[in-house]
View 1 (cartoon, each protein chain N blue to C red):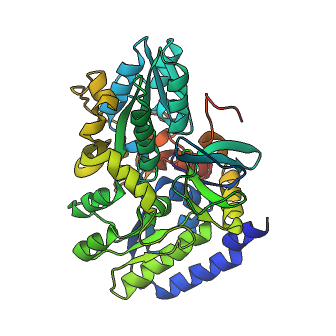
View 2 (view 1 turned 45 degrees about the horizontal axis):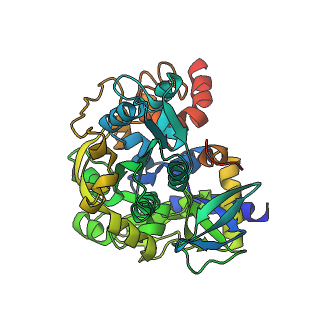
Length: 86
Length: 369
């Protein structure tokens, strides 16, 4: 559960003063809080940890890290949820 | 796959290993703090690639592994109540408590659910006002801002059916505790890249000054880790001890100030027991008094629950870098990821689980020769 996964912001909106959006990780998208990365906009890549973006990274960095996690078979467990539909 | 190659290029890796071999004049013991880094090191066999004399040991950086037994027992007690939905991260369900685990509670009809984010637990609480929704929050500084934000939101919305069983731990006090131990062997640390993405690496300045032990914040790619090892060995061989940042792609000196602010608004530093290690002063986070109404420990009166750890599992020594998982007589036989005796075998970031996954077959082959 402690891994951080890079993904691309595909949407962004503000609800109740909190900015969130969908972030795409390969074929899966997840609701993600974007409040800690005010500089990141739709199309940007962010490192996401337990549903919160913690830093903005460039695309190359994001793709590289994503592929590494995927190659180690760690993605599925990390994004597992009983409550959210992919 | 273009980007993959750049950070996993075998030629570059060998180049770094050659440089390492040139610089090393004596043995050094280095520790990686983060379980994610352990995974990469094992997966790519980096520990076996290093010139003789450089030894890597695994640190306590798996939050699932260090969550104290009594916290698991508290979670089990709370989850067993018929009016409660207990929500946590997936790994937590299989961590053995004193007598049972959360998976067993679920199998017995308890409402235990897995999420990947605390935000989902909040959503569930909003949609189910008749349920008492408890989020079992573990993790290091990377996870703490997310969990803090969930409580902050719950308070703002007046979400009375939501509470949190918080068992957060902090990296710098754990490093201090390791370095202060008379049994310590570690001479340099690979700092946890994502913890430092949130917290920056300012906190390590004092540690380095006090203990004269270098810290290099490292990333998670094979070449990141090799480079961090080279930076550490260079410092050690030159007699220097400073904080350096290898993972500049994500980490800054100050870290993520917005995340740090939410964390500090909701949590305060407290003493914390670490599974297998014992109590470490000022090494955890608990909810501030103003959030007492959201503190599951108080809401459900579990504050008095304590537990004694079983002696059979050597995870204490593994988490302090004193022993390897394979030194354990139960490893791979009585203790497997399917049937774990101790927490480091449960989580995919645990040292025993990583060893089991990547070294079990090699060991078996060796043993049969």
